[in-house]
Length: 77
Image (tube, rainbow, N blue to C red; front, top):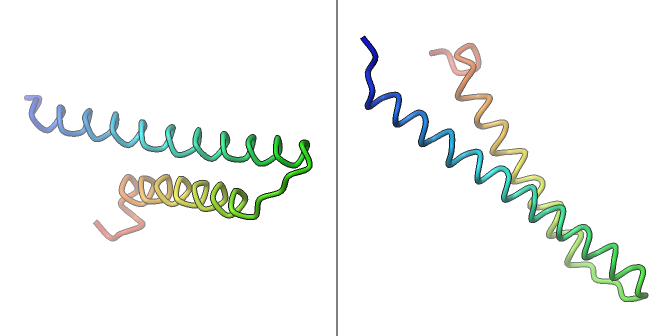
């Protein structure tokens, strides 16, 4: 028998994590585009590269956490 409450929890967690990853990646891409626009205009900002690399790093960490949670061999479950 299907446990619908567990199914709903997994579905909700999947949606939330997908939205988080997509939002983080989109913010990183937008920050990089803004940085490149500023370079084209002759204005440079050292905060934007640090910011978008940090956002990309967080996005990658969230993806790696998801892989860690999905693959039982990685955490001995």
